[in-house]
Image (cartoon, rainbow, N blue to C red; front, side):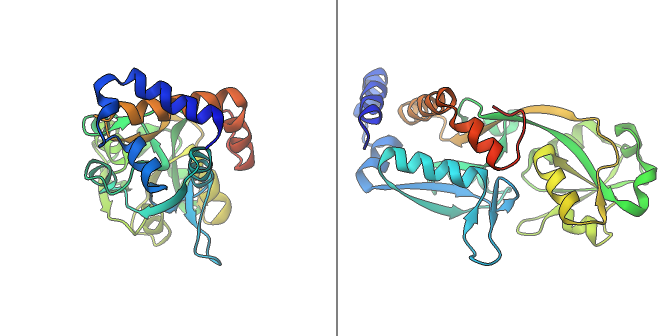
Length: 261
C-alpha cells in the first residue's frame, strides 16, 4: 500500500470514532482479505461492458475500479449484478461498492449510500430512424400511442413514470436491454443517458437521437452501504484525491466522455 493511502486509512479510521474499531467496516475487510468486490452490470457501454472477444469487463467504471484496488494494494473481483437487484446486492453485502455508471436518485438513496460525484449525466431519447420524424420534443413522447421501453431498476424507469405518464410502457428485465426491444420494433422509444446514447446511435445505424434537448441532469456516483461511514469516508477521500490529480479528467477523455470532470 502506498504511503499516502496508509495515511488516508488512518485518518478515516480516527475520524470514524467508535465505528473505526468495528471490524465490520468494509474498508478493513477489504484490506484484510486483499480483495475489493465490485458490483457491475457489464451492459452499459462505455461505463461497464463485456469485451465480445475476451469476455472480460471493460469501460470507464472498470478502469476506475481497477485503479481503486491498485491504490489500496488489493486485487479487484468483479461481481455480476443487474439493474433490478443492484441496490439489494450492496445492502446484502454481495459486493463492497457498485461501479457501473449509476446516477444519483432519491429512490436509491433511501436504501444505499452515494459517494461524492465523479461526473454528471442527462437523458436523451432513442428511436428508430424510420419513425424519428414523429418526435421533436419530450412532449411528443408523452402520448398514448407512443410505447416507451425501460429496464426495471434503472433511473430511466422513474423518469418515464414521472415525466411521461401518458405514454404506454414496456418494462424490460435484465439481462435483456430496452434498446434491444427498440431494435426489434417492440417499442417506439427508449430513454438513454447521454453517455450511452451516442454509443448506441453510432453502433447501430438504425437507431437515432430524434432531438438534442437533454433532460434530468443528474450526478454520477459510486454506491456503497449507507451505514458504513468509515468506508464511505475513505471512498470520498480517494475520489477527492483522484479529482485533484486529474485522474478522472484523463479517464473521461480516454472513454470519450466530455465535460464530466
